[in-house]
Amino acid sequence: MKLQPLEFEKPVLELEAKLADLRNSSAASDINLEAEVRRMEQKLEQTRLETYSNLTAWQRVQIARHPARPFALDYMQLSFGNFLELHGDRLFSDDAAMPGGFATIGRHRCVVIGHQKGRDTKENLRRNFGSAHPEGYRKALRLMRLAEKFGLPFVSLIDTPGAYPGVGAEERHISEAIGLNLREMMTLRTPTVAVVIGEGGSGGALGIGVADRVLMLENAYYSVISPEGCAAILWKHRKHAPEAAAALKLTGMDLQELGLVDGVVPEPMGGAHQDQSAAVLNLRNAITRQLDELVKVPTEEMLEARYAKFRKVGEFALV
Image 1: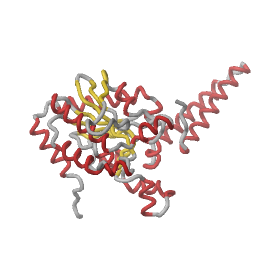
Image 2 (image 1 turned 60 degrees about the vertical axis):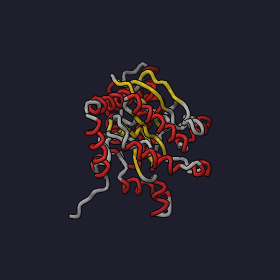
Image 3 (image 1 turned 180 degrees about the vertical axis):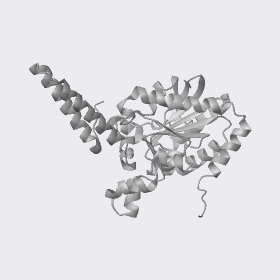
Image 4 (image 1 turned 90 degrees about the vertical axis):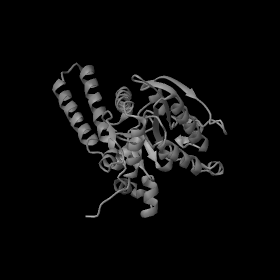
């Protein structure tokens, strides 16, 4: 799909347009403008570095939401192999916002599940904009137990603004479905890896996010509330979202420093949507490395380490 520039990317796009015009002028008029082209290329490269090497938290949130960014199914089909989707929670229905099934990655057979957004209005309505219903989380639990039964690692790809908050979701007990997943993931007797690939919003993200290893893509975010929601509460206006994003410490680098995630997966310059092939390879390598380590750990030791990992969340010392 055509890439739509974000506001802070416009200087880069303007230089790219000028460079293209310069090259076209050189070809059309048969005038040697090679020196000018080189200078423009250097200026463009410098502008890219300055733009993407100093991204604010809010700019990373914008990249995480980019509609051209690879979604869960893209990674399931490209980072993973032999993906076979399974449907339904065997209780109510199949939630299209939470696809999952059997797959392979590296030398590992596994079960993978994730939040799925849409590329256009029609698909977004079908996928509910990546906001899963209770049946989505119950399908995830069904697949977790299937992974445990067959001794397969379980991998989750998180990309949601939050679980669906509508009346139907409340009637079918969304909070119970998420709470049950938190408990069951803590005691799941198989290696688990969770990766935030885009948005990691509140309990909707956490419902498939309790894992032995929690990773984030470089331009993903993971937060108890969206920056806009936080700004509306604290500043009484959404225009303060950039300030809220900075205060929430929601980027991968912030969360790794706080000990809430175990690693940050690098992305191509400008975001995963700029070079999908590189993003796919980076994710595959990161997950494979974690699984290579986890499958060697005895089950009881793995469970104790998982428990200790989450017991440390929120610890602080007075100084």
